[in-house]
Amino acid sequence: MELVVALGLIVFKVALLIAILLLLPLPLTWLERKIGGHIQQRMGPMRVGWHGLLQPVADGIKLLTKEDHIPAEADRFLFKLAPILALAPPFVVFVAIPFGESVSVLGTEITLYASNMNVALLFVFAVIGIEVYGVIFGGWAANSKYAVLGSLRTCAQMISYEIPMGFAVIGVVMLAQSMSLLDIVRAQADVWNIVYQPIGFFVFFVAGLAKAQRIPFDLAEAEGDLGAGFHTEYSGIRFAFFMVSEYAIMLLVSVLSVVLFFGGWNGILIPLPPFLWFLLKVAFFVYLFMWFRFTFPRYRYDQLMTIGWKVLLPLSLANIIVTGVALL
Amino acid sequence: MSRVTDSSGKWIGWAFFADLGNALALTFSYMFSKSVTMQYPDKEKWLPYSRYRGHHFLKRDEEGEIKCVACELCARICPCYCIEVVPYEDEKGNRRPAKFEIDMARCLFCGLCEDACPADAIALGQQYEFSSFSSHDLVVGRDDLLAKPGKANAGGAVVSACLNTQENVLVKTSKQQGYNWWRNIRRT
Ligand code: SF4
Ligand code: SF4
Image 1 (cartoon, rainbow over the protein chains, first blue to last red):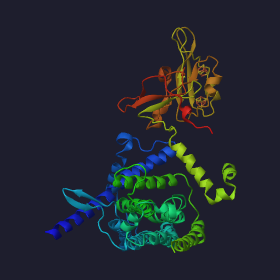
Image 2: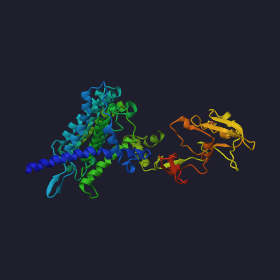
Image 3: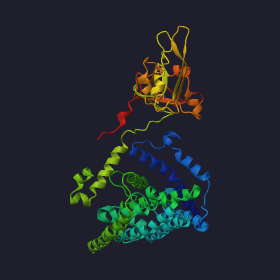
């Protein structure tokens, strides 16, 4: 009986997570277009529903009913595999993310995470690395100039930010003496990591921008020079997969920034429910992503490599050394 | 460029990304400024200034007679040769146009016809919504020109409008007093 309840709870949590992650891009696209519009003194979507609130739904219906076009020259197997490869890892990663301690519903303690892995951080970085293959395969399989250029850029870009990103969080792990995200958050109950690890956060966030392929590092899809980059040839629901994946990763980087550096659900000054604190912080980072997108131009391809190898990597290494010396 | 280097030329500004910070502050302030979007045609519509050169109209004199004396000067001066005037003599012995056609598809709205007219009979008015699926519909005759709206006496404003796809008039406006669209433009 115990086992059944526990199993049912896990299935329920996973289903809930998937549902939320699948539906969240709807409000997020609306928000992004609204924010973009107002930053450029436009209004954004206004016609469908109140202030265009139903626009994402209309877009979704459009994407679902569109022709699913596969170019004649494309590698059909890889072409179909790529969107799934891009979509699945961001979803899998959220299993390891804690959203709070626990709440008691009807007398039972329900934890606000699907699993408490002791190497959660490692798991997150390992799984999210797979997502890049979706982008690379997608661009390669389409057999089109722009798409291949996009995926080539991704290949080169990936290494130059994944390494600093991995190094940037080592300082956090050293402080918490654990790789479990839950322990990392608990270790920040008094002082958030951002106080001790400003450099680490900077490196992590810049690398995260590149990871999520958002402006100023959205070289893989660079609308200006590559059409739409790796997903130039995608249409309909497969294109939607890439879009959902992009938003899921944006959300993931926001959530990780909050969990690793901004104290997770620990609040300061104002006593709010922990989960609300968590949501507010994540919302701030999501807004930051959108704000950046409509403010900065795109970095050149070689500039990104320079930033990755010559700035972020030395900074993150120095951060590890300084943290280590300070802890001794 | 100059503005950025002014505040961030020093190494401290460089180290803390003063230029990027300036950019973020600028876009943030823009986010809370008024939007310049004109929601044409289903919510708002622009009423042009009185100097606006829109659809032509023919004027009548005090007795309700058409003012045009069919001198064909407008047809002569028109750079696109889009006016065709055929004169006749009416019962009072005046020279009047039997046929007065403007091909709006060819007109470039230069307003030369208005300038050339010795009888102050033709002018370019306020109306600008006369798109059509067929270019034949754009050849407008004498009686239609007489019925067209004249110059705007007040203009340069955005008024509320509603889209009406049933009648010929696609965009109906209710009131004449709108807001000045230029008030939303930021001048820095
Ligand atoms: S506005 Fe210019 S182009 Fe148009 S009818 Fe008059 S003279 Fe011709
Ligand atoms: S509109 Fe004026 S210029 Fe043209 S034919 Fe008539 S009187 Fe002459």
